Amino acid sequence: MIILNRNQLTSWLPTYATEKIVNLSKRSIAFIDARTFIGLSHIANLSLNMNSLKAIDSSVFDDLMSLIDLNLSENFLASIEPNLFTKLQSLFSLNLGFNKLTTLNTGTFNSLPNLHILKLDHNQLTRIEASTFSRLTKLSYLYLNNNNLLLIDRLSFLGLVNLEVVYLASNPVTMTQPSTILQLCLTNPKCSICMYDVCDHK
Image 1 (cartoon, rainbow, N blue to C red):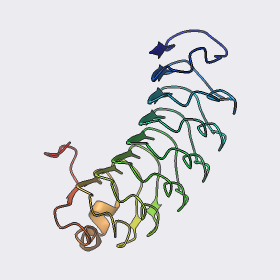
Image 2 (cartoon, rainbow, N blue to C red; image 1 turned 90 degrees about the vertical axis):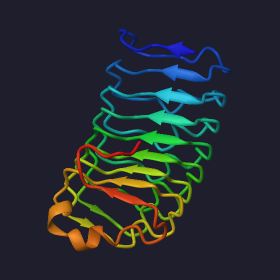
Image 3 (tube, rainbow, N blue to C red; image 1 turned 30 degrees about the horizontal axis):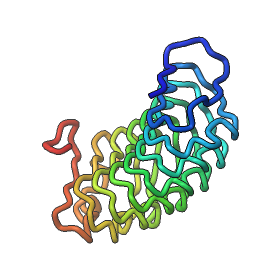
Image 4 (spheres, one colour; image 1 turned 30 degrees about the vertical axis):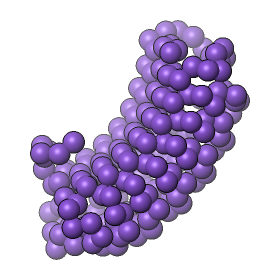
């Protein structure tokens, strides 16, 4: 395990190519060099939360093919490169909460076949297009609460056969389009839409 949170290092060069847990949170990181994680294919858990990231190069995570958990929450990301997660075939949990995201490219999550948990809460999203999550067939928990969502296409979750809970609390759409909300879980009848701050789910 490598833990480098809460320090004043201005750069970090990977030392152990077999480390599985790397914690780089709370370091005021504003930029990640594209070479930072080259050769670290054994990393399973990477924390970059609570930094100052505004953008991430699309090739930064290309060598992290064994990554299971990626935490990018509490940064200043306004957009996500379409190919940023392309090589993360093993990713189970992705946390993008508490950023500045306003839109999502429809292909952003296309290459995450094993993703179960996706957190997009506390951003500035205004709409969800129909094909945004279409290939996340193993997705179980989707956090969209505390955004500015005015429009969610009624086919947004079509095909998500394992979807259990969608969190939508604190969005304008929960008040202005209730009939649409009730039709969102078209594929899995066991799926629940949570429109409250506290729900009896994970």
